[in-house]
Structure formats: structure tokens, C-alpha cells
Amino acid sequence: MTASRTRVLLVDDHELIREGLVRAFERSEDFEVAGQAASRSEALRMFADLLPDVVVTDVRLPDGTGLDVVREIRSQGHDTGVVVLTMYAGDEQLFAALEAGASAFVAKDAPSDEVVAAARHALVSPRSFAAADLAGAMRRRMTPTGPQLTQREAEVLSLLARGFSVSAIGRAIFVSDSTAKTHISKIYEKLGASNRADAIMKAVRSGLLADDLRE
Image (tube, rainbow, N blue to C red; front, side, top):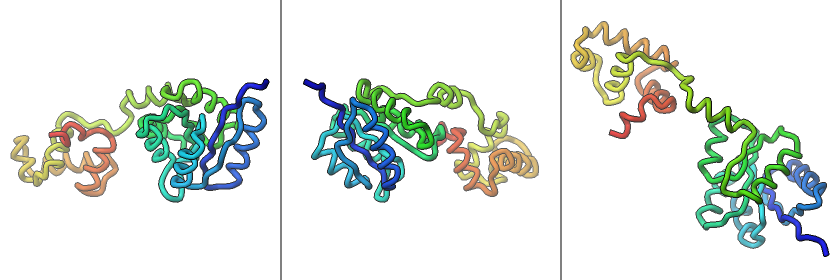
């Protein structure tokens, strides 16, 4: 009597990608491809019908994202293993997959054996997260690499975010309008911003305004 094989649902809107994944999993005796989906909605319908052991999904789908698939599976309380594939394997995408509840994150240009290995991890530890450069991504997140503002510039940025005019900023920090404008110009330069709105948006993305926005 042969042991039951791990059933995989593949989700990708490119047929050639799916075919390549099918071949990769069929080379392994412990996996079988239970189904294939080309969209978020089709993936969720097939998941409900098949209840596979592992889902392997691309991030970009015609009607949503693979992260939507992960979130929906987790919101239903399933401990199914979910592997997220992406062409854009940067830190931002990695942490988005982690926060969505994925089991593993793999770049599409990785060898197919890595996808199969990630599926094995997802099967055994669906609620833990594996990625090739997870440790490096964590170090980069903990180490500031964005714009470094002086204490005074950070103060001026905070006032800008609160809508203070140049004159009001000068009065608040006891400097002339000219000096306030100099601080603002330096902030724009460091952030690569062209105006106040652009500076605030980039400061938020860099985590420089998180505390201010919570007030």
C-alpha cells in the first residue's frame, strides 16, 4: 500500500508557469497536483472544493493578488500550507507575504527544487515562515537605511506634516523664515521630494512620521 501523496493547488495566470510547476511537482513522488487556477476567484473556489494540503500562488493575479488568497484561507481558520511566488522578491514583498500569513516566499527565478522544498516546509509548518533571505531582510528592516534627518530637521518635518506654514514653523522653533526655508529645503533634498505632500508621503514610507501620524 502506497502512502498518500501531498495534494497541491497551483495558482498562476500564466499557463507556461503552471506547466513548469506541474512538472516540478510530478517529479517528486510525494506530491500530486490536485488542481490549477488562473485567478484569485478561481483559486478560492477550487480551494473550497479540493481542500488541498498546499497552495502555491503567484502574487499578481488578474482579479486580485496571491496575498488575498492567503488572507482568505487564514481568515477561514485553515492551517493549509501556502507558498507565495513572485517576480519581485524584494523585502517589501517578503514582509507582505509574512504578514498575510504565508508559509513560504520564493522568487520565481529560483530553481524549481526550491519551490518544491518550500511546499514541503509549508506542509509541515504552515504557520511558520520560510524565505531564502529572511535573516537578511530582518537585519535590513532593523537597520535604518533611509534618509537620516538631524534632530532639528525631524522637528521641522513633524511641523510640516501638521500643516504649519513656513512662518509658523519659524516661530515654533525660534528661527527666521529664511532659516526655516533652509531646513525645509534640506529635508526635501534628503527625501528626494519636490514639495510638501511628496515629502510627507516619502517620510511616511520611510517610517519617519509614524509617531506623528498616530497622534
